[in-house]
Image 1 (cartoon, rainbow, N blue to C red):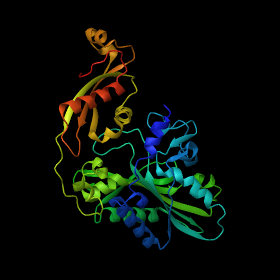
Image 2: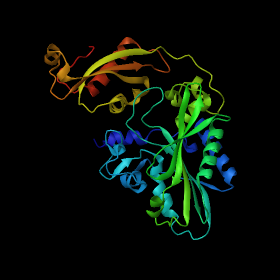
Image 3: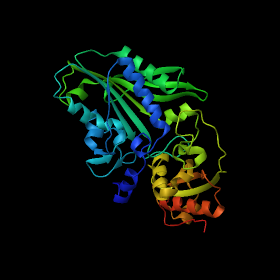
Length: 370
């Protein structure tokens, strides 16, 4: 399941909406506001680190304390280029290099390190998920001083108030491999409580792995998904709109003013019946669908498994018709297709349906729309 060269090239070509060098976007204003709030709160400088999405697997996992058998390492959910190199699954993969750079520091030190950018995942397809979301890691690293849970709560409060001024939030205990006293930050929205970020105190073992003495060094770590943060701030309901070239949409993504709805084109639904391995789920199917659609992937609004039936439970005529094999499962998958800039014709929808079907179906008998 290693990435091919075309897949790797395509992934690295995706525009990073946090990077001013790639054009202006409201996400940059949102991030700048968070950085300014934290540096003013603590009266410290900030350094922003921008690195390629291609990282050492050890930096993405091992040096951040992930266990060898952690499910997040599974190639079904992360995107590996080789046994030792991968597309980062979180912006925290840049932290080991930041910590390494601090080893020679002998003087008192206190700085905010900002690591924004794209991360790469095999994810479900719906209005709130995408295979290349944006994240930011915000790490306050300090030498010759103490940082504790009160500092962490003040950090969380400042981030929430910057992203969603006046919003109510709550802290839910959470466990992370590279922090202690971890918590998930949920914000109250009209749709209920939603996760905005996660944070914690930097673990001593992570500091030690870069040669930093935890008796001298300490830190606060916070990670936040910027797509969701921007969607909540502006009131946007479909993540695909963040990249839409439609002038009615793109003109609204240059600032943080509330979203003014535009009329979207009607959605088209197509159902598929596919045979596949028993470990396939909406994340792996969604990634395969995005990959096969390529430039047309933004037309796929959602992919949902509506039913899952082991071959052994299928009626005998169906097993014969499909030439199904023991151990396979039959999935009923619903595709929702919706172009943001035009109405899809039945012919276009059927052609997209067939492309996805061929990518997902693992049986010898094909049921194409023709």
